[in-house]
Structures are given as structure tokens and as C-alpha cells.
Length: 89
Image (tube, rainbow, N blue to C red; front, side, top):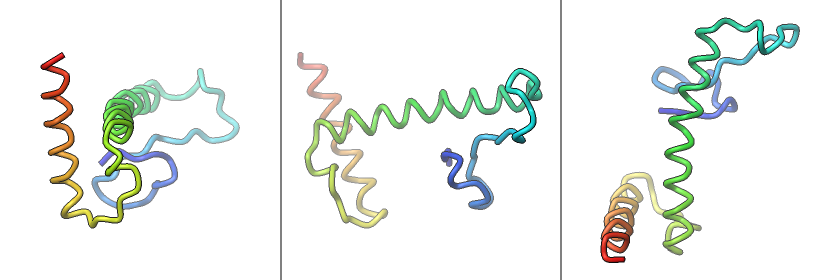
């Protein structure tokens, strides 16, 4: 799972950006740390953009209180309908 820096230490499988120590300049950070953060940013932006499109299009996804087991099916249906709609244009 990809997460933002607030979820640091959330556990195994949760990927968060590597924070820099306050005394280190951005240009002096290790190249692997910068690459890791750049990859996470790129992947997270795809997912966040997709959710923005879906919640903008489908009012039911804006303020949902459905449990995680059911919301997945609803999002899949909304995505399928959005794709069908874009193909017919």
C-alpha cells in the first residue's frame, strides 16, 4: 500500500516517503532515497487522480460510510461505468 508521510511506522507493506533529516539539504540526500520518493509520488498521483475523477463523477462516492468490504465493489462498478461512458463519446 502506498501512503503519505503521516502513516510512517504503520507496519509491513505500507510504503511511505523517506523523510530527510532537518540538517541535510535536498541535493545532498542519497540518490536511492530520492528515487524511492520520486517513484512513490508518481504511483500515488495516479491513484489519487483516479479517485478524484470517480468522486467527481459519482456522487455516491463522495460521502460514503460503507465498509471496506463493500466499497471495493462499488468503486469497481463506478470505474466500469465511467470507462463505458468514455468509450461511447
